[in-house]
Length: 189
Figure 1 (cartoon, one colour):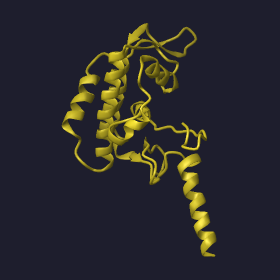
Figure 2 (cartoon, one colour):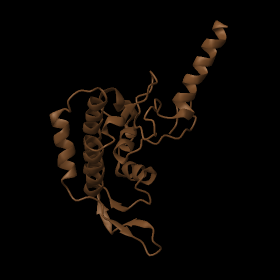
Figure 3 (tube, helix red, strand yellow):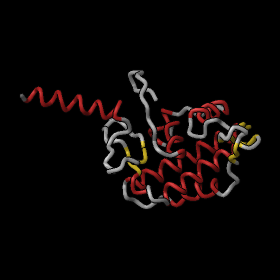
Figure 4 (cartoon, helix red, strand yellow):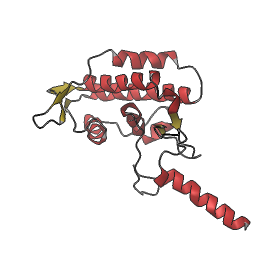
């Protein structure tokens, strides 16, 4: 990812469905929108944990469905992190997408993971939705977090052993926090 200053940093949200949340979102997150054309969704797939990317045929309608799923998932995840009930309509969107056939994994001739055949955008969206169902109903659901930085809204799964991760990335928000704390201590002393 890139910060506002353009500096690159590593951000692993810990789940495929949370990777989709970095492409924009509902309401104030709309300004970060990057999914405009089928090529944009294909580029996201290339950077995702689905790599190596499956052969996909993505339509403009698939992009709209991916954005609809992402926005519903965003609201559901924020409800989860806020201890609120899931919005029923958003669960319907996730469940509807998850009910469709997903991408089909395969083992390549060299023993590597690959994807079977060419798939449509619907298969991709179903795969992401199924990952969301697994995350939100699984053992790590209570570890879904929002970055503790005041100006960062990235969401991740805390997979650290103690379960006390606070930042989207130690290289970015965690480091900024440490620098501010050091400056504050220096000013006091």
